[in-house]
Length: 366
Ligand SMILES: [Zn+2]
Image 1 (cartoon, helix red, strand yellow):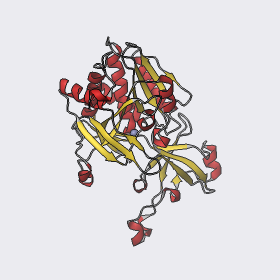
Image 2 (tube, protein in one colour):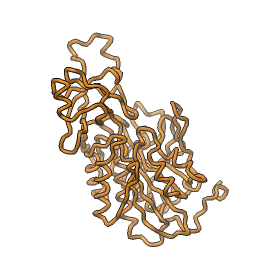
Image 3 (tube, protein in one colour):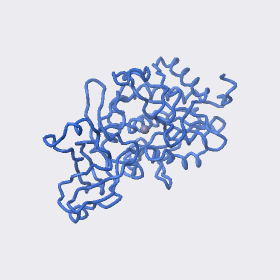
Image 4 (tube, protein in one colour):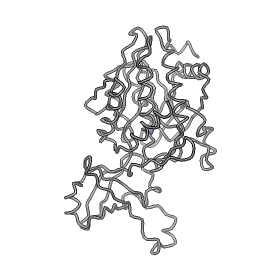
């Protein structure tokens, strides 16, 4: 299983897919699903949906992970060919200098570039420790004029992402671009293959969602269409086992999958997820029965598209499940394949425990 997840993860990490421009990622995932005999469809937003029909008297389940990644769109092309950009999603400005980027013009036509970093020899003492705001950065493609840039297919609005990259680290660790959330997508693909042959399951919708990094709401139309009783979102949880994160929590890289017991974001949008007790209970029971580790996360500063999906219809019984990640949103995020395998097994165990007797009543659990 680990080898299959590794292969899918590497393949998906290498496909660029800025928020709102997920089409190549969607096609890659659709091909993976086709290869294991699962058909899928996409909606107008670009969400990819695969349904395994099951027991209609059991609560239906939507399992989802987002396909998109953060990045930039071209804002202005200067006469000398340097490119200015707007940011899309939570771009970490202090980790942008000298990054390699890819301007996504079209498959086979993408243009590489670099984010310029002022020559060190000309850097003043106060510039040495200051961060250049994204609005002031320029991308250098090597093309020397606006005409040449436009001839290469780059226009205002062209998407750009970190150059897709995978860097295997020691053991089961992986560094690279868009581990958030191609790792979640890889787990979902693996899970779909495992559950496809299993009898006695509820109806399960696998949704690969769009525009999570942009406005968190791309998955909404899929949820409104599917009207699931239960929603389980797969995304990162912050590993806190580096010195800079130590006081934030107790999530260890390689320590297994985690339940997010609390997520919240207070900047701009007041939202987050406090999981339904039925789902916390289900995950804890599944972990105990399958002898899997299960970590706990609770933190402010991050949220997922489940924040909106949980509010669909009469309310959806929801939980955010995650794999530990280090260095989130930088060009080299790190995850551990063992955690992804653990998350897959945990979800397999959890979903197979949902039957017609599974109660969604809070009073059964509190
Ligand atoms: Zn994410």
